[in-house]
Length: 374
Image (tube, one colour):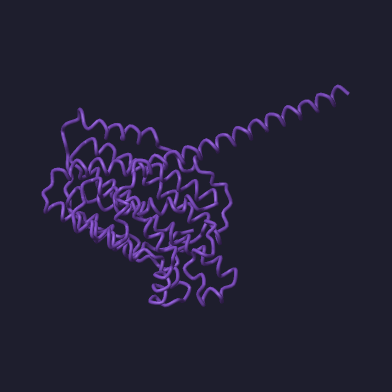
């Protein structure tokens, strides 16, 4: 089945073309490089995995409740519309929200793949090119996995959100080589990481938990890469150049905070856009979700050296300024450990199954031997 048949609304042109304006940069120094970045590159090579094998795609998923979403967190809960909905309607609403969330993850991962490839092309340092090449493969795998989940388990996709597409386009159109890092690695992936983590830590469904845990294990390396590269580079910039990048961060953060609300879902249920926006703004869950969305961005922005007065005021206005002191390294190490613990649990369960199969075979053989002897 064509993906286009699964979209809730037509995604527009089959191919979105973003004109490239930057330069491809070659370097002729092939020896040396930053040891911490080369170590990350080696780790990126060692940690490659196959999404078709590591993830248990045989797990059944209810398309009308893919994430185990409680009624209370659905935007329409408690409204006049909710009171008129049947159980089937509510299941359909859960399906649409799951499709919308994972569709934005899917489109974002394709964007991350393109941005990582752009970094390979444009970054001047060979050690950064090496690591970006491993990240490009990671992002391809993530897009593959999210696409498979939507096709096989949910059976529905949403087009890319206009604001996400706008930020991605701005990131790719900028000719400065550091902007794919800043727009994608810090902003878009930072927001995605927080969303991944929130679903990973609250869902009781094993398949989406596996998918998000393993994707986040990769993303921990990507964020570390972006921090290393940008922290080194931004130390060399003038105050004016830093302010330009801070303005980009401010605009991007407001855009994502105010526009990533899933209003498209409510519109598909016949609710006018203005009313859908009001319901979204009144949602306590959305307010909590918005704050958590910045838990990965604010400390990263501060760490790379973008912490001017205007940026700090913007984060105070958003109510997320205090997140600048969060321990990003601890969050990332926890992401890696959770994925490894899922692997250990799965390997232990598979080992128990093998032991049980051997024991059953031994018992069956003993019975046959007794029968033959008798």
